[in-house]
Amino acid sequence: MKLLLFCPHFRPDLHAATGEVMTELVYSLAKRHYEVSVVTSLPWYRGHAVEPEWRGRPWRTEKTDWGQIVRVWPFPTDKSNIVGRLAGFAGMTSMAAALGARLGRHDIVMGMSPPIFFGDAAWTNARIWRVPMVFNVQDIFPDVAVELGALSNQTVISLAERYERSLYRRCDAVTVLSEDQAANVRAKLGSSASTNNKVKIIQNFVDGERIKPVAKENDYRRAHNLEGKKVVMYSGNVGLSQSFDLIRVAAEKFADRSDVVFVINGEGAARSEVENWAEPMSNVRVVNFGRRQDVPDILGAADLHLVLLKTGLARSSTPSKLYGIMAAGRPLLASVDEGSEVAAVIEKTGAGLAVGPEDEWAFVRALDELLADPLSLDQMGDKARSYAETWLTPDSQAEAYDKLFRSLVDQ
Image (cartoon, rainbow, N blue to C red; front, side, top):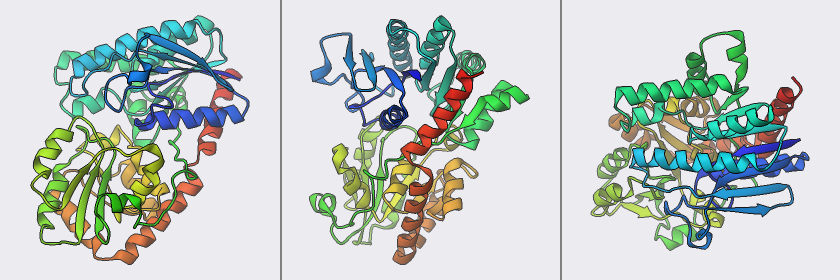
């Protein structure tokens, strides 16, 4: 089977969680005798600028044991510049579509969103060769941008929604991460037997061999003077989707607890704002992303992890950090929409607690309850790890995609 894949990030650009997801999916499909051509961006995510060693050419091509990779210039912009970001993604997509067409016929094509424009790159190539196309939706656009207030012009929103629905209708299958997202896409397509069959739920995976439970008192704790503390951690993108005010309020409430430290480990568009309020607080540490090989120690250093999504976002976005936390065998406290996928996973597995989004009182109360019972925290962490080992493996994800691809090719 020959697959043409359009995705925004791929190894070594793994600071974006989707880079890890797509890389491991390709490796798992290669074990199933797939030949894969990946069209992606030059590495740029960490600093939102193409990394120095990759500059100098607008695209690069490399051969691999399982196929080939074409990397194109990403036209990087600041995440807070939505218009510039959309224009950059549109430029990258046009280049990706053209270079993808030069790679020849494949049996099936898949495009990842965001950026939503990659759906058009995939569709264009699928039409050229008259083969099926799968649209892999990680976050639903424009819903996330609208919820964040990044898109407020009603005309622009209407055009974006029409474009989104057009892509869903043109593709042969849409894969999403949760039942929430599936219901969202089905509603936009309209209810029919063919619509319901087009939308598939395939969860992202986590590499449970690379990320596994480690001792809490590890090198990360020693490097940041956290030994002997109760560490409450947010690890991931410090972006506009997260409600970091919850950490600020909680840190103020726990100011007299010398044993509790809040760690914000990551980078992103909201980092400078977080640093401004965190600087005078002795119980808050803001730390840069670590190296990829340090992720098990970073995640393992926490007594409790946080998942913080602003109101409405948990229904259109499922944070990949959820899976890494569970693989590390650590419990979590989530501030997310009731009934969302994150809340459902926590309830189903017993891996922590979920409270409503941006609810400061409920968040602080739940945090106090969890930190008061270390034994329960350990038990929740064990349940998280068990779920990750059973349901969130790369091979299970690859098996689901393999089954989907073959069903479409055989039609």
